[in-house]
Length: 434
Image 1: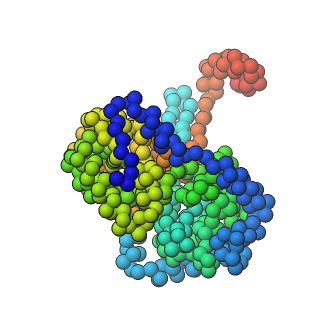
Image 2 (image 1 turned 45 degrees about the horizontal axis):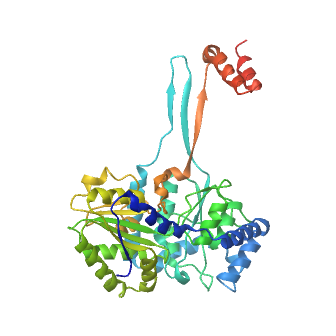
Image 3 (image 1 turned 90 degrees about the horizontal axis):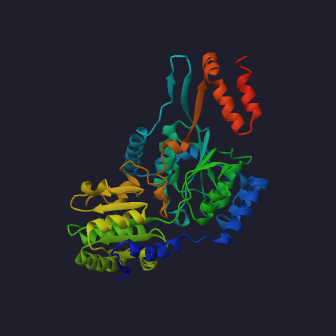
């Protein structure tokens, strides 16, 4: 078995599991200090800092003139992609857009008989910055992340969207990132990576205008930079390593379950892949499949490290105990590999995305179905949600009270103000009743 086996009989067994998984989120104070220094350099030196960092870490011959990708180069990249891939990208974008269109909120108003009008005005933020990792050497670009972050911002009505992504060693960007941006109608892309890109999007430079909201995945330097900028700009979330929990019964296919666990394990040595089942024969079969399939993966070394450190097959005495456990695990991705997943859906309280039944594997949600794949991790789904249109909107309360309203309620408002020791507040209302 490439991962640990655990018996979970009751909530009394939860503490040990929680202690184990909580070690995935130990802060790295050294990274925190490095990122703080990087952000300070970008704030002070702007484009010059971006060029210096890019030369040091990504492209030794990087020139300041290469910071922004010419719009015509973005459009031209489409011609370099196979037509079949362009068709797939178009369909993926359309499905994600259709799903997120249902999330758009409307402004609303209520009117009282005395003429008072109260309401809420929903408006998009002015400008959004999206970070797109380039992948290994720029050759495995996270095009799905660009789609998942750009589309809800566009549905929200954001007028200005900037993308940053680290250049390859030859100062170019993978044509799939450029082509996907062209399909999305985005014409502003900057060649910058890591924490310095995040700083540029937040503070602005000569080349990059500052943004109101930052979104997009990245390594620990990107995540740390976003966390340090909370309160100065909006961010999507500070996401940790990927994770999947599968609740399965005897009707599940062990080969499929192993494949689903490995789909997360291949992301990162810190990714967590956990199977919960009451069927011991299934648990053993999945363990065998993990060994066989992992050995045949191009990223098998990463997956093996992930499974060894953060993978588990957990057996439970019954389905109710399994449901209790998956709620405690509060996973980013939850698969209900059950004969009747709909029967237990109502009992699931905490999960970022829920995949129903044997033919709804997690990658369907990553790329194509429509719901957003940017999800909270490290049990934060207990209080947060998937990236959505709302992340790119702000809401203003509308208050229009009449003279009659102030005359009727002014003394009550003044009394509340004086209870809090705020005399000027009270007089602000009372002067309108004289």
